[in-house]
Amino acid sequence: MNTTAAAQATPSVHAYTQQACDALTTPSFHAIVLRRDVRGQFLPTPVPDEVPSRILTAAHTPRWA
Image (cartoon, helix red, strand yellow):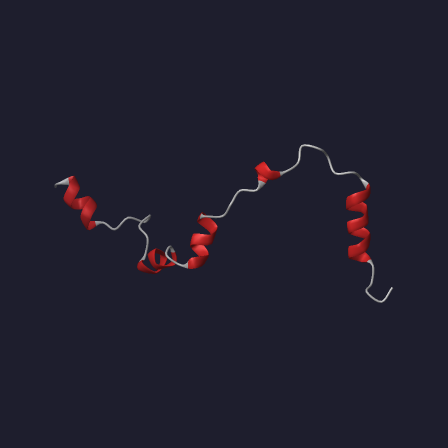
């Protein structure tokens, strides 16, 4: 038996379905693929301990307080 013919006759388990191919053209997929990596924009200096403490305190303070 010709192995090329056998490979063509047997569907690959890794082949995309039409639904999956359609999903690859959605705007959300493009946003994921084209997203910008921001790790290179971090500052080299560490954040002072007071800053995260203020943020966490503000997040846990009730609005009516």
